[in-house]
Image (cartoon, rainbow, N blue to C red; front, side, top):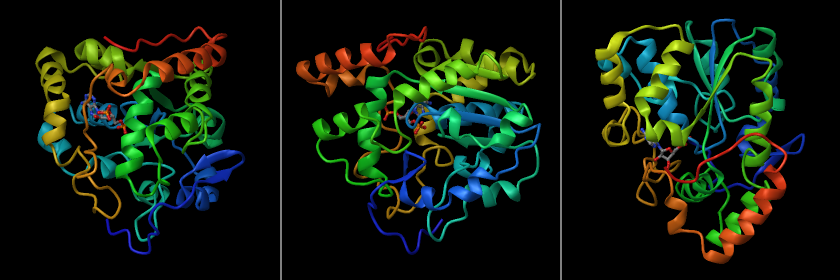
Length: 295
Ligand code: A3P
């Protein structure tokens, strides 16, 4: 991955009202016409909800728990990012065109923006949701280290933009609710980051079942171990350590930052928390979707 011709920190650009990383927006046509295959498995998340974690889990399951096989390449090669586009780097759609089945595909798109073919082909999908406060904190750090994003400003400023849905991939609130509704009609396994933290074995078992893989207790235990935060943090094929610093600068904030539920308490002031909760109640009042902000 080179990233030549990259302007650091370009402003976001909207596609049909959805704010996106400028380069992603400029490649939108390719994404929209993407042709899914019936055996594609889609991993969908709002950014920072545990995408890399679930991707590693799925890839290890697909490889029957053969850890060495899962180290064959970096996670963003094993599980291409559909809408990814940065100058000088192979686009997600290009990677996918050359990939033999079964493909596991990552997306951060809100449900209404997913290319139609995924619905037409009735692909299996795994959605991971994480509580809004921890996502905000994680996203703030990610904006700082991943230079394809605009400057996040101060934490206070970023938090306001996040609450207003003026960050890349738009509103967290609409994202989690949109996918939650869609699961009534499609093959979507909806998971929570906090449940995965609390009982990884149980949640990984659910994923195995959804993927129709029965690998036995020993393999399950192995996958639990090798997808733990500590192990993934040290795994250069999972921790984004191979990306050039012109794109991601881990010295600003490592991609594998803390990996916990409840870190928001170290960042939100009392006033920010009150304002956030009041706004949250308005935006999330009508949904049956419930989150835990600590485990
Ligand atoms: P923090 O910034 O809170 O540490 P994504 O992959 O969607 O970009 O999400 C990244 C977040 O998931 C980061 O959160 C990262 O540390 C966390 N994460 C990655 N792998 C994890 C794991 N195995 N267990 C728990 N958290 C993990």
